[in-house]
Image (cartoon, rainbow, N blue to C red):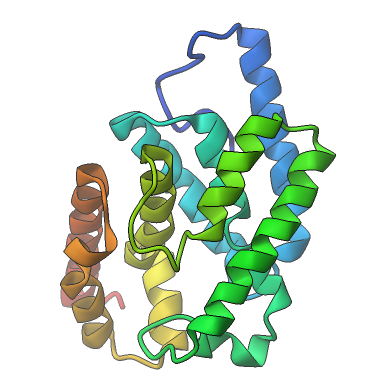
Length: 217
């Protein structure tokens, strides 16, 4: 994986702010990410978060939304998994999940950790409120509460269609390649909120199918 570079995956550039302010904003994102990393060393969450950040920037470019909300939220959305014992995690997510309560723990604990990190970098208090609200229901809440929430949910779920995410999920869910492909294909309309995410997902599914047909799985 190439290092995460904040603010350059979109061509929008500074929006109604000076270049100096924009560079400061990117620096804060990097600081948040570095503070989050100790909480991402479980469940393949570091690579998951890096891929989600890239999808988030792509969706911000296509759909709009507030980078100041979306990027901290996507960086921090899964830090709470650190509080769920590794031997119980597969009961909390994936096609064979059986414990919504465990899944909910990663959201509520994630809110606590994210709040601590955001306050540590002196992030804007009003933005913290919205970021934490998104994190608090990014898996369990079936409906999106805002465009920013839609983008975070979609970026999170697009991981499943990426090459790295698909390979990791098939292995940890003990699926065959075709079974895994059918899983992501059948859930396309269920998982995603934005038209852009659905189109990206379709493209990634085509890529995974080409890899299977080409014997590159």
